[in-house]
Length: 86
Image (tube, rainbow, N blue to C red):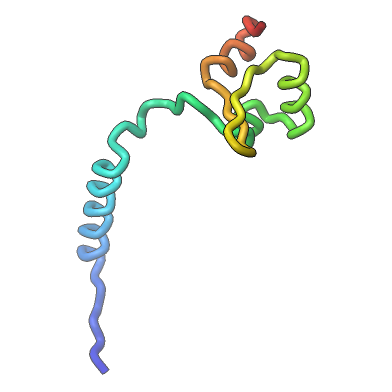
């Protein structure tokens, strides 16, 4: 049975390599998303699913439905937060 030791230096190199890979795979991660799913909107606004549904029903927050998933523009969410909604 072979035993190989992993040193702290090995872990540092692995961490650096993972950071580089992450930057390559997700280069524009610093830009905010343009479209958010319902769960992201609820988390952002700290509201329940029912409250989000009411915002949709009364036209306060516009949405786009693709299949069974509803998407919301970040721009529209910001307008609602600023009090400039429809």
